[in-house]
Image (cartoon, rainbow, N blue to C red):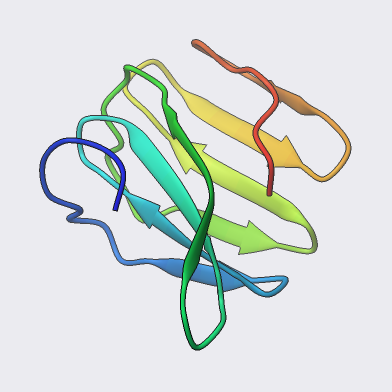
Length: 86
């Protein structure tokens, strides 16, 4: 799995993808298939403090400075938010 360190948060699944969250801020997305394929990986350079929530095409991610919200269409939030494929 991309990223340095261990993934401590519970993975979240939705829309045929599984999301893995590293405490130091790396989020990795893999295709939910027999042979998992990494779709995307992004280091937000912010600690992730809780298991993120997937709800109706939105990903809510709690980081040190605040909560980030990502959707299939756009991203908004606090901190170093930028578009992230979900």
